[in-house]
Image 1 (cartoon, rainbow, N blue to C red):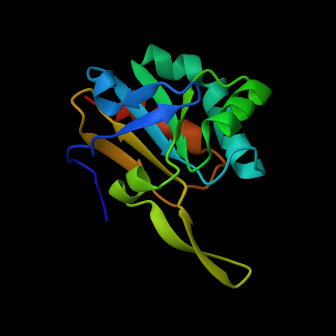
Image 2: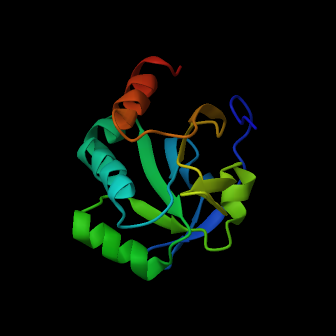
Length: 155
């Protein structure tokens, strides 16, 4: 399932502070919407901290960063505070938004199958169109890839 070049699925989710955040709140901005498996795990921490470290570069390009996982608001708050994350993390406990974006998938770990979030990033442009998607993300160099695309690949 690809969402590139189509209208991004609308959503409203609670953030770490309990505030409802909707995609339409960011009309006129580029939105980096990234789905990740779990707060405070090694790969997810590296990814979040890489976004944190490039936060100003994204801001300079009229972009906001929103992370999404199944974790609750309290866990998101702990993650944000522990690592000084300057962006919101959204709660998708029932994986409804993950399903809309096609990232709720069958996964395998040590021979065991289970449903979970596939690490994926979407660049949603200022008009609400999915400009680019990165699926089955490998954390190393990923943030640089997103930033380079935003600098050079958008209108």
